[in-house]
Image (cartoon, rainbow, N blue to C red):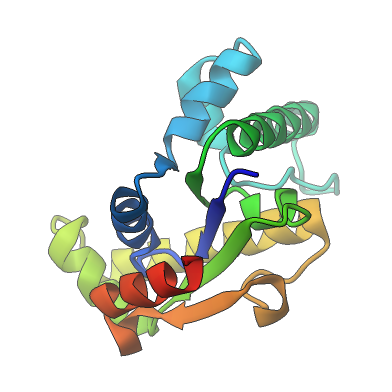
Length: 194
């Protein structure tokens, strides 16, 4: 049986960095944004279009929704199903680390899996993003972006899995990167993966 580690995360908490370093330390394949390209190829769709829909739940029809959004909903469903197939195929072929995309739920029945949630204090995430990835943005814009991405991930998780995003019951480990630090999170995950 292949060994799998999945990461769910709050935006800016460092799960991508942690996941990549864990994968390198274990000699596992690492998948994050690469899943977007694999999924796009699977459904013969432009990668940019897949990126725009990535980790977003379909908009539920209502009076304020445009007809354009109504016609996008089936595309979200098609994308999620293709991504689910790609994630399962990867997990069945090789030891891997998969970040995001509800992989913990999709691969929850696999015996040799470890599911991790990485979270951090809001102010720590703002500071980290400002220093490392979003230097050109004001703190207000970074704060708004964190809220936007976290809300989209919450909806995505709830819509496709019926679970609450970040609920400790859905993971084997829930780690605070702001309290523990990136390196300590990596150490704990490697220990748990033994």
